[in-house]
Length: 159
Image (cartoon, rainbow, N blue to C red; front, top):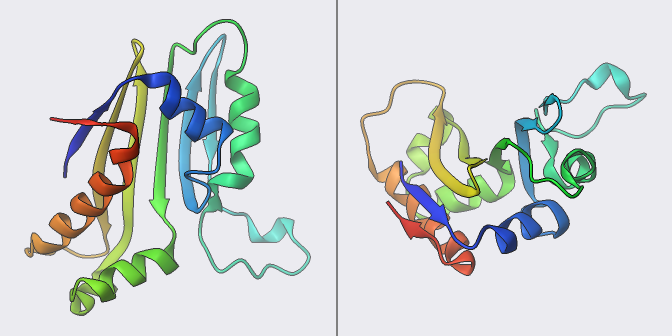
């Protein structure tokens, strides 16, 4: 697990809410505090669809992003925002295979970015959702390194 502080916040929030940088991630949940608190559960409800064939538990961020943006846009900054994004399973599997940790594939349910905006600061914390307890820290190192490379474009300050 690693923590990153992103400065400046404007570029990152623009990429998160107005760009496509995170569009291949899946949204587990979002909490947006503006004049009210809005909570979005990213779990797909298959019964809503006539023929459900998505194959993922969560919605793609690109599908939820316009709704989140509409809740945030305006002249006032949000009081706070919290987004829990998962690397999509195809990319997760590629990362696992490329880093020789395939024996742990069944124990990993997600590589996660916890993104928090509060007091004009963005903090991102990496984590891994495991199906069972895993002692091997090599998995954490692989995800942390990947996240660090991904976020370099925003010049994060690692904590």
